[in-house]
Image (cartoon, rainbow, N blue to C red; front, side, top):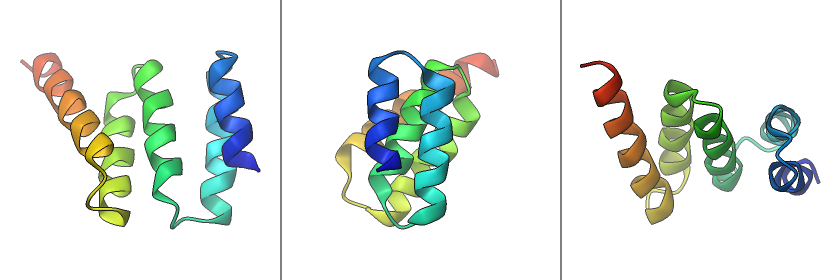
Length: 85
């Protein structure tokens, strides 16, 4: 329920509310990789690139074949590299 509500809040551009719901969802089921993927996207939108990178790593750890998470983690890695130059 919290995961779905988080998705709705993202659509409504309520990113802090979405983060709260994704956090609750992870507390209830820390093995659902898609929640980490979705939370990473919100962190990306909020320019929390380190947090997004960590969440994409967790999503990949839980689901190593998640090509979307792998692709998005690579994008975040490049952003972080450019910031740290």
